[in-house]
Image 1 (tube, one colour):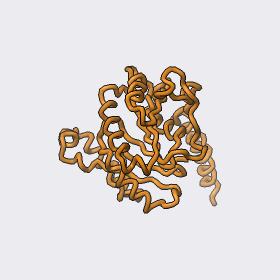
Image 2: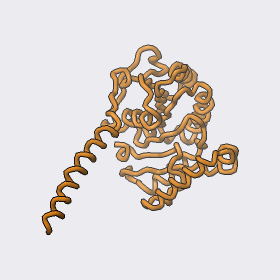
Image 3: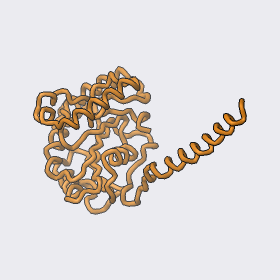
Image 4: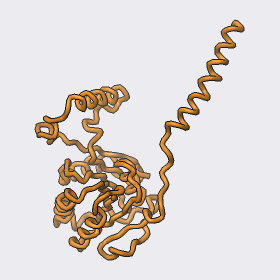
Length: 243
């Protein structure tokens, strides 16, 4: 190799590596710090005295954990919870499946946590737990927190806005039975296809449509184009997948 070429190559590496490192340092999000109060929950039996949460590393003790990330959801949480419990409390499921509901208040400015505890008292036969984050972490952070402290053999993340039909859980459950019969690591993703002809989609902005199609193109390129709705907030995980 010619000496000038070698010099250029070494210079390029000497410049690129530090720049890449600095980019990682300055652009990477700071690590999430879990505060002591966020490792506790309130419920119907302990509305004022928070109790310690279990860990995802522990053995699952119920069949299903429903993780609901909630930010300023006092308007929509009662209806969503009513629909959820109406399905989970059907006689057939009540006999065959144990569950818990974990509401993760993502640093709300309203009374989401207080409402969650109040609703827990209104459904005495259901295991509803409320965790309050001191700082808003965003939907992903709230879901992550709920997953880390879930007791379920399977974990369902579901948005508080009711965009997904909760009874479709059975479709996800059936698919999971086929995909992971021994609860090996697996994820089943729901779909909001039933909303395609509603105002929620018809009135979507031009820019948002462009971004959506761009995302779908990227997903096809990386090989997961078969997942119809990757952004759907209705996903079922096995405990091992969540771990």
